[in-house]
Length: 156
Length: 156
DNA sequence: GCACTTATTATGAATGATTCATAATTACGG
DNA sequence: CCGTAATTATGAATCATTCATAATAAGTGC
Image (cartoon, rainbow over all chains, first blue to last red; front, side, top):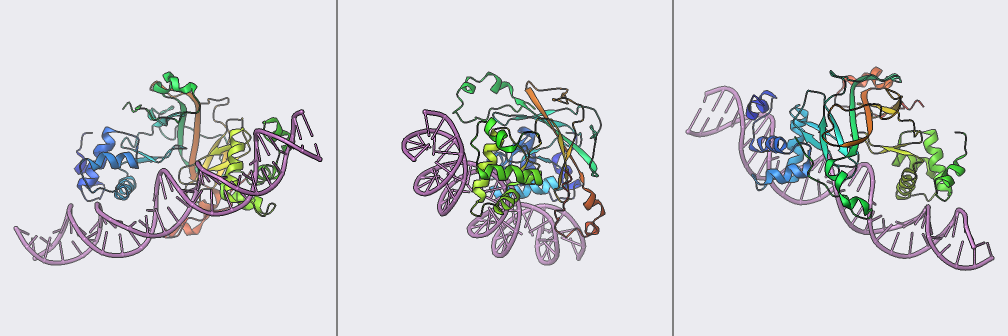
């Protein structure tokens, strides 16, 4: 958080635009947001900001290494600003909420497979699955016909 | 492989149909296939077998616990018959090929996070990323404008 | 401060993967 | 062999995402 966002964007070789700043700010407030959420957050600031433009900005920032894209099974891609520290994620099996989990074994790659099948492995990605605090308590759990509802379980 | 497929389907509480048998057989031949691949394989046997029907069958088998569905980032969902042994996967970053990797630490959950953020964790899913044997050799690697081509790296 | 070049954004359409709705068919218990 | 519920067939719909193209704006040099 030391350097300001503008400098970071510039240092990544990108032009500084209000949209990019706003997207980074949105991801600072709401980590693990999907494109649609980022879009809605940034729209408060830029009225004509379309969802497609959101994808373009997210794509550029991801490619530049300023944000990271994760794709948990069953939910749209999510983006986060915490990068370069090889952390992992917990995903709620009921509502899809995502939280960070520090790396299990320190430096990357924090795991080594027993048999690589000839692959030259560069990364180990760990995703934990379980119930978030809200869904553990939620009485709606007993009604299996109910749609899963996304809770506000972004603690970050 | 001891019990025959028909018995397994029945024991899972499902009716035995030719389509289901064919899908299971297809996944025996070509593990980690996506819905489209399964569809094409089964079509050889059932001429009118549609892609949508493939999704229905794959869904039923998955829900019954007869097959497992994995969703590596960037590729469509893939299905496999190897279940219940908590193994993991290596995915080729270039061509998307998937191979099995035995569990790093034995019994599930083979990993424990350092901070759960209040989540009640039930599963740890590990995905390794790297280059498959074919893509390690492939000279097209040097031409970055080329599309990634899927190699036949299913060793199983 | 102004013009120029090129990166970036806006807009609308298109694609790929998957699901849904409904009608036709089939497995299997009685 | 019959009946019923489970399964499949078919076509349309949805969701997330990308593509194509035109309009706009950032940053560079003057």
